[in-house]
Image (cartoon, rainbow, N blue to C red):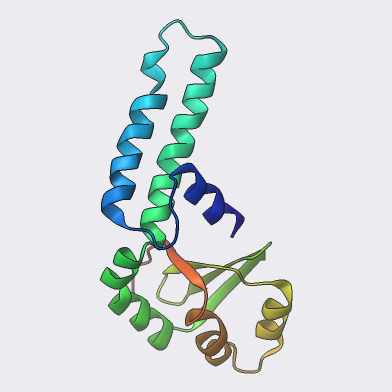
Length: 149
């Protein structure tokens, strides 16, 4: 959640993420912080390079969790979470990364340690995740997999 809030603040996003205004703000920030604006190098050039990376990463991250992106990929997400089993779990802070047997990996944000512990101790992890995590947490696709037939 910290990462989401940090990027929303950087792009001045309040509420839901809309792609058109986000793209406009992204272009403005890239122009403002492009490293080529500081050809003499120095501290300002290093700051611009770091900020440029942050802007690019933040844009791609916010696009990946936007409602429009989620809606466009809902069918694939639903297929993965209903037809594939959980292959691997990684939890750090409030982020849960789940790799499924079809090879797709999704990140879920806002998963506290208590919820993660309940997931691990559940005798039906996928069912628990469907009810308590998949439907209520902000998520994004982290990696695509290839389904072997």
